[in-house]
Length: 457
Ligand code: ADP
Ligand code: MG
Image 1 (cartoon, rainbow, N blue to C red):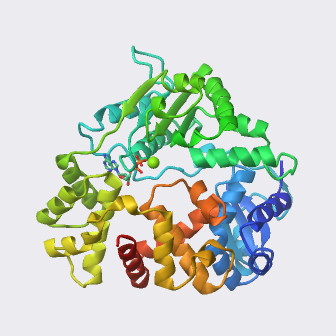
Image 2: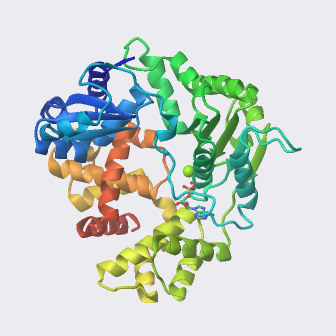
Image 3: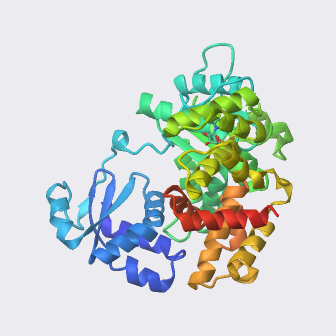
């Protein structure tokens, strides 16, 4: 049984630390809980303006908070007063009363990125073992048949080479094929953060206790932990994880881990290393030229875009480091063509668009990005990293956060620490700019291009 008002109050409290008191009072407190349909919480807003603002600025934070309070919820919808009746008439729950949230597992949203599938993954020498192992685990999670032990499956390799893509492919496959299996996919840095929250706040009723934390993971049939190299520094988390790992393993549940390096090269407790190495370890390497060309073609096919062969070849030849950069380069070339008003990118456009990528990337770090943002927007470094909320400063800060997530592969938690914010705030800043980028906002695109050119020197 869940009391709607309690859930609502807890949710508002949870977002309070990321929202200024004024904004909290202006936009969030006027909301009221309306009802729950399936797994969606409906909130009522007194005015259209409040609805619009909340949808634009706060909905993601609210959703994250709601799901962490009760994971049976999947989403939030906001309606205005005049829409209340429509919603309530179709609803099987009554306003503000006691209600039972149905466990509608099958209706729950797929948490995996839908385009990260096995079909969309280009297979070649550098990743075929990882691919086949992932496919097998997806088809028979937890199975002990055959001579090879696939539990845990440990996928490792450098950044941007497809580890997360493969994990989501497994997730999508299981989600669609075995609807009754409970799958948990989590970024290790977020799990670490969740654990520390559970540890420090078990007294305040809003947050999970350590026991809840462990129980939550014990309940799953398939546990996927992405980027486990982030376990390294945390002894207490390693202990907890070891327990969770053992419980699941003994119950025949499938565990899938990814890391940027092999367990041998991670500074982990011996017992955890031996657990990690107890199943199948597969490495993903860098793609060769042929694969890079195939990946670009696949990407174009997926996005329905056309690019000449000489442009494809130029990109594939020049971007060797990883697939993420390869995709980034393709996007950049297409965007650049749009910026200069050409329908299709030609070789010259590609060369111009990628000019900056060839400079030494090893000198790019948080500091160089923040310095570049500081000089471009004429906002001091102290202000970018500080707490002031004036428009210019917030703009510069948001851009700095976006560029750091875009140009470096740092965990969100680490970026959060640099800015003195938690990972949801970082995610929010990143998504805010990403949305503008994907909607082709010219001013934003130009600013990104300008700042990146300063960073690259
Ligand atoms: P990692 O987790 O190893 O850092 P990701 O899985 O996030 O890397 O991959 C980065 C990007 O490259 C994603 O957009 C992914 O779809 C794409 N990608 C990586 N490998 C392949 C591949 N073999 N085929 C198609 N796309 C790929
Ligand atoms: Mg990844």
